[in-house]
Length: 54
Image 1 (cartoon, rainbow, N blue to C red):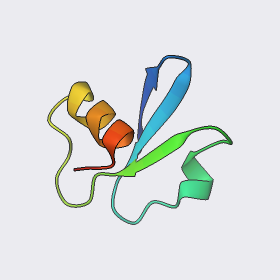
Image 2: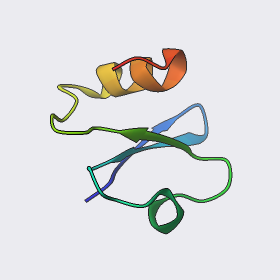
Image 3: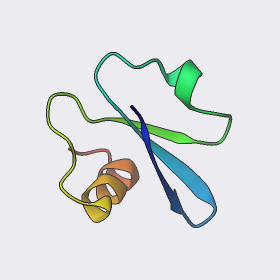
Image 4: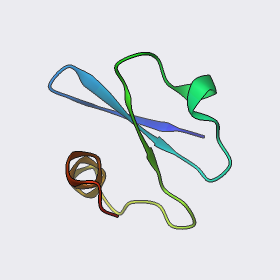
Protein backbone atom coordinates (compact mmCIF):
# COMPACT_ATOMS: atom_id res chain seq x y z
CA UNK A 1 0.00 0.00 0.00
CA UNK A 2 1.36 3.39 -0.99
CA UNK A 3 2.51 5.83 1.67
CA UNK A 4 1.95 9.56 1.12
CA UNK A 5 4.32 12.16 2.55
CA UNK A 6 3.37 15.82 2.12
CA UNK A 7 6.27 18.23 1.71
CA UNK A 8 5.81 21.90 0.83
CA UNK A 9 2.32 21.28 -0.57
CA UNK A 10 3.54 18.43 -2.81
CA UNK A 11 2.58 14.81 -2.16
CA UNK A 12 5.42 12.31 -2.42
CA UNK A 13 3.94 8.86 -2.93
CA UNK A 14 6.16 5.96 -1.88
CA UNK A 15 4.95 2.98 -3.87
CA UNK A 16 5.41 -0.68 -3.07
CA UNK A 17 6.85 -2.93 -5.78
CA UNK A 18 4.19 -3.67 -8.37
CA UNK A 19 1.94 -0.70 -7.60
CA UNK A 20 0.98 1.39 -10.62
CA UNK A 21 1.72 5.10 -10.54
CA UNK A 22 -1.59 5.92 -12.25
CA UNK A 23 -3.63 4.17 -9.56
CA UNK A 24 -1.88 5.88 -6.62
CA UNK A 25 -0.87 9.35 -7.83
CA UNK A 26 -2.59 12.46 -9.06
CA UNK A 27 -1.11 15.13 -11.35
CA UNK A 28 1.68 17.01 -9.57
CA UNK A 29 2.61 14.15 -7.23
CA UNK A 30 6.10 12.67 -7.09
CA UNK A 31 6.25 8.88 -7.18
CA UNK A 32 9.10 6.94 -5.57
CA UNK A 33 9.35 3.16 -5.65
CA UNK A 34 10.44 1.50 -2.41
CA UNK A 35 11.29 -1.72 -4.26
CA UNK A 36 12.10 -4.55 -1.86
CA UNK A 37 12.97 -2.47 1.19
CA UNK A 38 10.94 0.36 2.70
CA UNK A 39 12.53 3.69 3.43
CA UNK A 40 13.60 3.83 7.06
CA UNK A 41 12.26 7.34 7.57
CA UNK A 42 10.27 10.11 5.93
CA UNK A 43 13.52 12.07 5.55
CA UNK A 44 15.10 9.24 3.53
CA UNK A 45 12.05 9.16 1.22
CA UNK A 46 12.17 12.96 0.82
CA UNK A 47 15.88 12.79 -0.01
CA UNK A 48 15.23 10.09 -2.63
CA UNK A 49 12.45 12.16 -4.20
CA UNK A 50 14.53 15.32 -4.26
CA UNK A 51 17.82 13.89 -5.49
CA UNK A 52 16.70 10.73 -7.28
CA UNK A 53 18.61 8.28 -5.12
CA UNK A 54 17.56 5.37 -3.01
